[in-house]
Length: 188
Image (cartoon, rainbow, N blue to C red; front, side, top):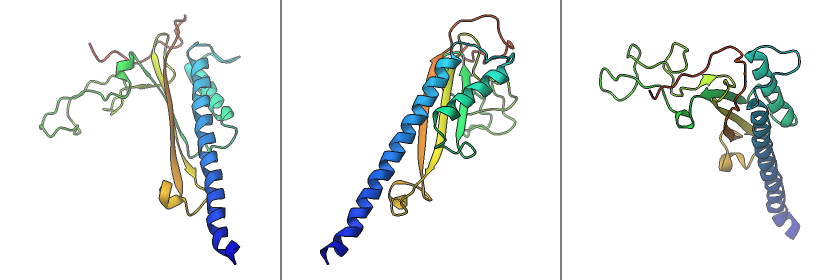
């Protein structure tokens, strides 16, 4: 009789412990995969047989996928690789002239296109692993599907727990430039 009262609480605690351990393990995998990818990315080296920046970026993304041991569904994960001229530019939006004074960017207002993509962005980073000397932000987000239904309303949203990892590094100097593109310094 006592077991019938205690068993639900006991099993809930066991499953919650396993759930917490899985979330922590996947978070560590995400962080270490970004660290390993950034260690490769800072060198500027190309994978065997590659000759373009796109092939280099694809190899870096594959490193991230390999290091997460298949526990992350990359069709649901977001991996951003953005390059900047300085660490101070990381996460900064492109400056704009607030023509109507409402404090936010509206279509048609003039802006400084730092990353050269033709649209005003809240993050001025240029897509890709960057050129020699560039600061590169590797960022990954994933909504981990919770295994314990009762934990969902407590620690997650819609049965998922948001996981985030990022690392910012400066690329080493190397020659020659792959394509000559990269972020321009918007602070000047």
